[in-house]
Image (tube, rainbow, N blue to C red; front, side):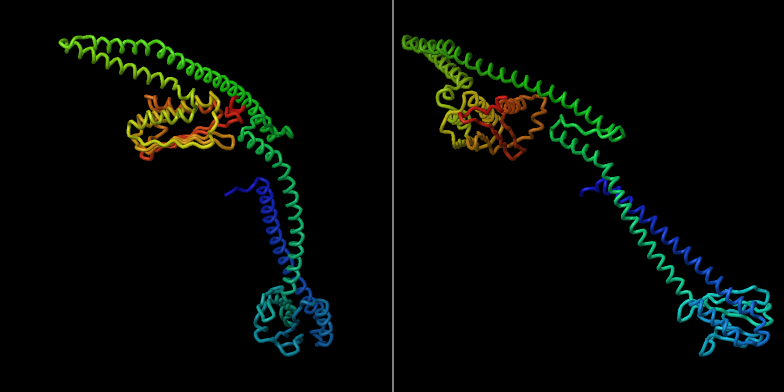
Length: 474
């Protein structure tokens, strides 16, 4: 799963921080508004009660109820949230009430202040909602009690409206914060994104890629350090390429010299040693014919020596063919591979098939020699190590490529174990095949496992004449 980008993290952090601060601020503002509103309710209720019970106490004492009603109605009109005003006399009877249908049950007993109290506030739960009930004793309770009830719902309504306004303001602030965070994130992450792009380019092999240095801050210092690293990598890559090129040229010279030496040794074996052995065998045969019958033991000894000489001649001829098969020079790669497969595998009981396509024309001399040596090494490995019963060689030329595959059904092996074996002979053979393929600009692959046989594949790019391409020639 892909992780979030740094820009998204910055924007997300700003959004979460702004959201947290906004919600916390809104909740605190709402709580403050409610607290201030409750204090205002209590203050206004007390003011109304004090006006009726203290400022106009003379009206109660003179029993001027009509004027009290006028003052009470004025208070109700100027304070819409006042639910009721009730004045009780010292005996608890109702002297004046704003209720038109009678005093609600339980209201009288709901808030009874002490004679020594200035006033008392109770929060009453009613069908209309919570009501703040302020009870103010008149003349220390000797003239009765004024009760003023203020509905709490308008307070919450005002608080809710202010909360929504704050939320709307907070939403606008959050949009601005997101835009600012996006801008800051882009400003911070753009050089990092360019640095990541340069890093990916270097990972793809573009070691000369540079990261833009946009400032002298920490990111700029990282970019400069990155560029210094790519300069060092480019220098190492150039040195390695030069070393590889020199190694390839050296290896090519070694392989060419090896082929030339094979030719020379084969020619000398044929021109000198083989001919001398053949002459010796002929002389031994002639000597055997000249020995009288009565010297049967001597004649038999000379005959055995003649046979050994002929065996030596055959062995020398085999060595000559292994060093440089004449069929490769005279008839080409396909005939040489068929001849060598029949000669090396079929005597061992390994059924061998050679399949070809697109090879009606000869390939370049260098290509044919290198491919033949690779196939020869693969067939020798099958003969010496596979223990299989079936082998197949495929040679295909199409779309400018020569593709070679050598496969058997033998016991297989673990390639890593062979390549790291202390003996190393088989590993060197595989390494030689790989190096010959590399000199032709080709691709060499080996697939093997214990009990599953072995398959070697080779792909070589060719030009129109059948020689390796210019890129392969290097």
